[in-house]
Image (tube, rainbow, N blue to C red; front, side, top):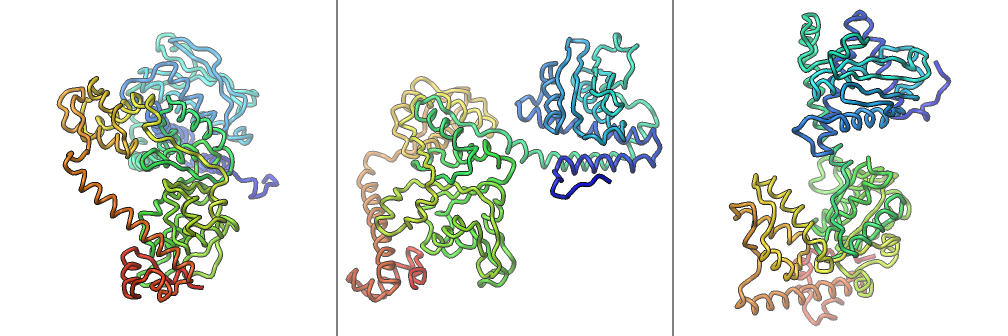
Length: 520
């Protein structure tokens, strides 16, 4: 056995070893059945690879052309460690060559593995072109120093060529049919597992769609391209609905962590009493209702990216714990004594002014400087009118598919109305408006835009609501500042606000503020 260390083991090396040992074990079936097993595995894998390729290239119905077929077979071999390239190509035949085997040097001990290449190449070609004969003229496994594989697509011209034939209805041999029947349940199970995995795989590796025809969004994309490959902690700022999470996903997808988890969490949507558990996890019995161990988002994002939206809504206690995780790279679950190491890239987002919150004592300065190593500002929709046509097309395409409609565009009058509206909810509001309008559209064009705008006589009601919201926000902030100033002493807070202690407790309950978080 080679003198190797487990530290040298990679996922590809593990799979190479596994496949080689599987092939050795299959020899017990006899050479003919062993070769058939290899072919069945490869044919099933080929179906999966083709399905993923079609999903990524939106080519789900029509057959592949020669160019797409070449792109697929070269891509799947090179992505697992080969060095394949196209040598020649025409409508009747094509040739690909290889100077590095994906299975490594040990392929010389098991040349039957070349049958996998033959079956994948031939099976995909037969499904799309009706027929294929795969001729392995040279192979590294046979000590030729390189591989030279011909895929013949014309049965008349290929009849005198050596190789294995594939066709759309290949399995006419009775022995092969019996063997297929023996393995049909296994193959069906493999396909189900692969398809389930591929849904996440394809979505993960497809870059997020970001419309950037405007100068502001082009600047954002340029920044993402520079920032993504680094390990820098980011703070994304922008109004509600501008696409802060979309930008975070783009940064993750373009980084070295792109094949690891991307875990988003909206800090403002979680009750304060549950927030620390959601972030850092908890141990069984840590509090009433903690009936089992729970992993927080930091653990779930291990090796990948954690996106903290509305980071400004974190409580004082959560801010303190978050600061420690960022500084030390370790955390403790709620109720735990064991320290866990974490490796996570942190991207935070907010639509609030953190400078003002720091001035009011509502956000820690040291935490702000930790999460704001690099800042990215996403412009509002009214700052990027050049993006509207492409955004509308993209949204209508998705909504039409979702609701089984054929709406492809909007009328000139509707487009004028869209351009004239302020869009306080930005892209999210535009999506909701177009979806609502599309549902009531019978043709292929939206002619009436159903904006969610109140009647003119509701101005006084809206003003009253806005005033109450402003008062509530100021009152909540004043409570938090006072609690911090008096270290959670309710009596002093009541004297400061010139109200009773009972009234203070009622307000704390209303805003779900825990005074214990401010007591030392």
